[in-house]
Length: 144
Image (cartoon, rainbow, N blue to C red; front, side, top):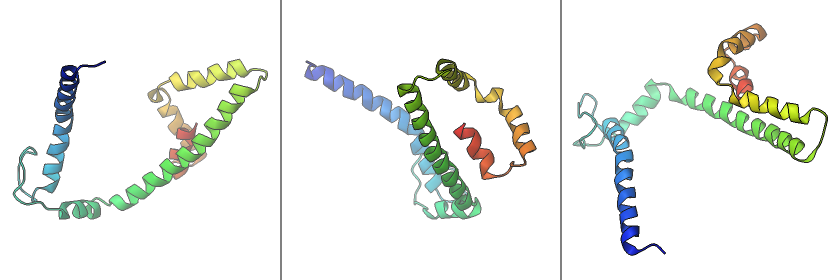
């Protein structure tokens, strides 16, 4: 059983670390809500909150198309990757077929190789297939 003193000390330590972790977020929010040209440094509360900064950033930064692209790519990758991973997990878990052990270790090897090791050959493969600058060039490697 944890004593009351230990529980209070645990929560105090957790609160201190929460404040430390959230301090940069506070700086980002105060900078985002400050008036344009107001150099607050990010760590002081602005005199007035300018919520229009977010709409200006959305329009000037063209964030709508970027958000749409991210939603398309991430939803396709998650759905297709989940389906393939479920089917592969079922096959490895319930079926005993020739080469299953070697194939399983090949999958593990593919997970252990860092992406930086194959990003240049992957670009050449995608370029040769003619699918650079398409959704497929983002989706297919992430599914694989």
